[in-house]
Amino acid sequence: MCGRFSLNTPPQRIKERFGLGQTPELIARYNIAPSQMVPAVRTSGSSRELVMLHWGLLPSWAKDEKSAYSMINARAETVATKPAFRSAFRLRRCLIPASGFYEWKQEGRIKQPYHFRMRDGDVFAFAGLWEHWEGAGGKVIESCSIIVTDANELLRPVHDRMPVILDPDDYTTWLDPHRNDDDSLIPLLKSYPAELMETYPVSRRVSKPAYDDPECAAPVQLPET
Image (tube, rainbow, N blue to C red; front, top):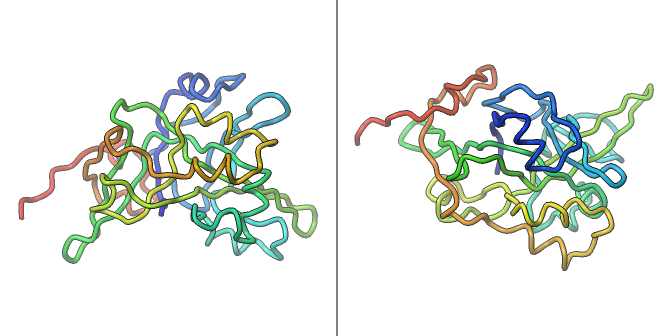
């Protein structure tokens, strides 16, 4: 799964990486958690835009807002067929920029968090879906979910699942609203090459969403066993 991530890349680099028309106004985040607003890149007409979406997808047909809290992730194996995601998979795909993400490993009686990122330290993108929901009184919520798949060799000792990280060469295909066939999209939902990533343990303070500072993503030395 993917339940926490960071985005502390300079806005100018985010603009360059995702082909945005304007430099986004973003503050550095080190502990982004479900139900919070997250930046996402999607297609708008012939260009790309960066918007803020509620993390926890709320299907357009949902009767209320509660279901959004349980839909932070969509499984790659069922995303094309599961009712909550299949419409968004065909029509409303997005990129969710990240500098890194966290997973927890059970070590004795504690869960030790680890930070995963690219070896070159550059920003990357999760494969995401977005939805538009309208409730009583005209309330509108735009929300998103991150697609997950089997863990690669780097993640497997910590967790059996990982977010789908898209190759930059596939961004255009993923965002193309005219691409809605499984043959074009499903092959993109694969584990990212482990040799292009790195990981290290971080402080357990990241387990609390109230903490959101550089210390959350800073390496720590684990006690010898």
